[in-house]
Image (cartoon, rainbow, N blue to C red; front, side, top):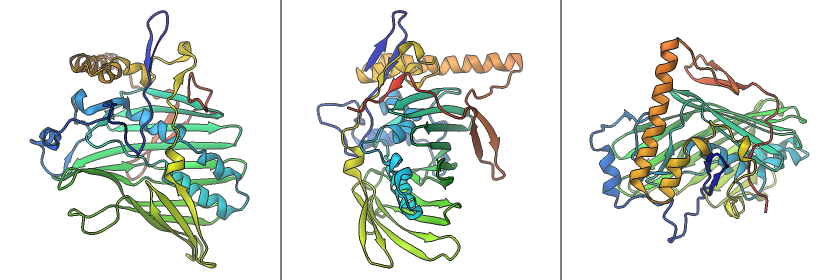
Length: 386
C-alpha cells in the first residue's frame, strides 16, 4: 500500500509475512528460480565468510526492512498471545504463556529473499490497539537493532537488542542472532529474559529455512526457567524433525523438571505435566498466523523521515511493481545518501547518537540498549483490529 501527502511524502507498507506462504497469483514474495541463480550470488565466497555487509541485488529483496520484520513479530499476530502472559494468575501459568509467546515471535523470512539492511538511525513505529512498538537501528557497523514496546493498559514492556551475524559455510547461511530480549510484566514485578535461536538458510541438498539452536528463558522473580531446542532435519534429511521444538520448564533452585515441551513451531506445541501426565496444547500456529492485518498509515504527517516505510518507499514500490531498473536506482540512492551523511559527520568530527536508546557494550563484546522514554507513544502507523 502506497500513501502520499500533499507534499508527496511517500510511505509504502506491505502485508505481513506468514509461515504459510503466499498465493500463486502474487509474486511479491517469490524468490527468483532456479536455485542455481541464488547460489550464483555466493560463487566467489568461501566457507566461513561473514555476510554481514553482503549486498543483494533488489531482485532478491522483498519490500521490507529488517526493522519491519522484527516489529511484525510483535504487532502482527492473529491471537494476542502477549496479553495472555499477564492475565494468568499463577506464576507457572504465566511462565508457560511467556514460553508460547516466545515461540510465536519466530517466523522466518522466505527462502531466496531477504529484507533490506537498515540504515543508521532508521526507525519503525507501529501501534496495535494499546500496544505501541518502536524500533531503531542503533549501529550500522556492526548492524544492531533495538526494540522498545509498551502496553500501558496491560502493564507490559518489551526491550530487545539484536545483532545478526550471517556466515556462509558452503551449503548454508547460518545467521547467528546475538543479544537478549526482555519481557517485563510490570504489575507482577516479573522480568523474563531470553535469547533467540539462529536462522539456518540451507541451499543444498534441498533448499529450506529453519530456526536452529538453543533458547533459554528465565525469570528470577518466580524461580522458573525453560530450555528449548529448535531443530531441523539433517543434511540428507534422514534424521531430525522439520521445524521441531523440544524442551522443558524447571525450577531454578532444585533443577526439578515440571513440564516437558514438544512439538513443531509451525504447527502445534504441547506441554506435559510431569506430575499428572496431563498434556496441554500451549501453541497453535494456525491461530497465531491467521487473519494477519496489513498496517495502515493513520497519520501521514506524524511519520518520521527516518521511518522504514518512508526511507525505503521508492525501492519497495519498485519491487512491488517488478520495476527492477527503478529498484536498483532507488536502492543506490538510499545507500549513497547514507555515505554522504557519514562523510559529513566525519568532516565535522561528529559522533552519531541514537535518538530513542542509550547504548552500552557488554563484557563479551555484545550490546545492551536502554529506552530513553518510559512509555512508547501511539504511532502514526497502526494495525487494524478488524
